Length: 84
Image: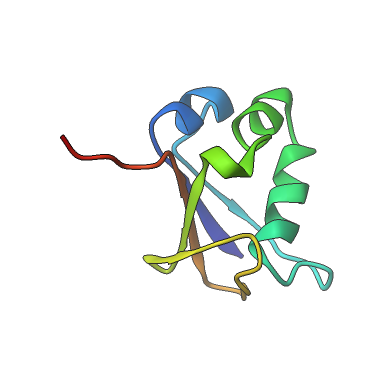
């Protein structure tokens, strides 16, 4: 299992703040998780449709779609953060 966290508008589109999914033998990277999640609902597909506008962290370390994942990881999706 991996824990998925959604923040800001991603949470609104997916309809949840967190979910746990069981990874299978074909899931090795964040990109694999994104492909799986996008197939789960229109909201997930909308939230994760443009990964250029979504940031990702694996175990609280910034990553990208090529970041490797494993059972027990926490994967967070959030919009870019800007300061002012």
